[in-house]
Length: 555
Image 1 (cartoon, helix red, strand yellow):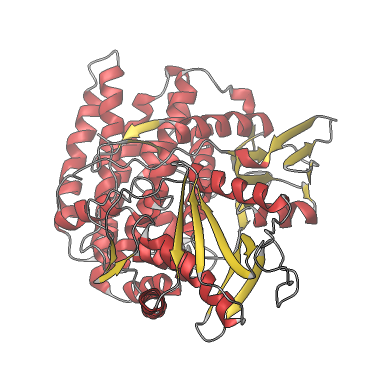
Image 2: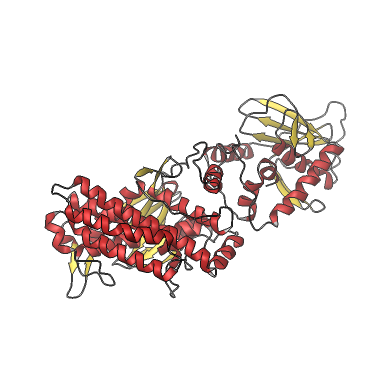
């Protein structure tokens, strides 16, 4: 972590204080190289000048230790013994710096080694010296450039290490992370740039376009949905094995899973639960009809400061209104976009759609200048009634009679049954993203707080209802991907049956993976990643890093 501090103080805060870690190709490769090195035997060089044995017991190849005086601990990957002296050897995956002086703050550092690596290697040496060993130098090997550099112990190095530790303690006490680096060449290679959002941060802060594009890496993992009642989910090595009651056996590698979703009475073994949580994979639990019961996920991040900021903002009427206004504006814009797309694709003159789009314009205009939360809810409700009144025009003729306004709890027609289930899946996505960021899903800003209702998740999905869920339902109907027999029709409610749920889950996942160009940052992302990005932007607003929150809207 001291290495990270010297590299970037914000990175140190995100990883050490907030407990956030994201793997990248470099971290995976580096970890594999360390594991391969650890499996090799310890090398010990015998001195030709001194035949006497060293004054300490035989050193292990790797050593976990701590220095109580410095207040640091660490794991030394490789130790050599040469001329009765202990030498710390560290290997790095990247390249050595170009020849020239190195500096951290106002302190000059040795050439040929990055300042962050000087801190790490120097602290390893300090740990051994505190144990009473004679350590006068350390060595670092950069694999990509095949360069080996020696770091000698000196008073200047010792002063640098104490300064690093002092600064680490200061940054640890900060409730808000330090500001991101601006236009830094370090950011593209950082595994946490999708969490830190350095260029997006300054683009939002200065209300201008991002100067460069650092697109968040694509997440190729998938959500695994277990919809067959009576299924058993087991851990099979580095994979999940799903055994259905019909004898079907499916095996999915853990590295390909981002979330596990269980519908109805199915069993997940205790070993599977602990294994998934250890891998950072959450498990959501639904009734057979699709109602979300809860989510089991790894412990929330250590960033208590973000949750405290959320609670304080929820008690501030103006900040609540600011967040709610941004969400409602984006939702109405996205609803009008859905109607416009239907207008372009329609075969008739589209008069009902044009009329609805015009009727929603005043609600959007009033929402942009609204100064009262209850009034804002009224404008949102008015726009929603107009939107759902026009939505049957986007349905295939055979389905238009199945939607007469929005009905829920319970849905009274087939289209409403699809919409309700799609919104449940969307809320599940939001709760999982909120948990990864470290906010409380139960405390929102637009939806009132009701026991058991994830208000913040419902807030955040408002702009995504038309852009993600409604679009997925409309596409499924227009392509004939679902049949009227895929529903269970009762006297007072209509629900999807098992076959219908699987079809709608497929449509939801296709839309989740579909990429679109972000209107503010001008790079392409999947809707699932955009949802998490929106949660992180909200976190920035709550912490006071940016002064305005506006939700994402599609063009």
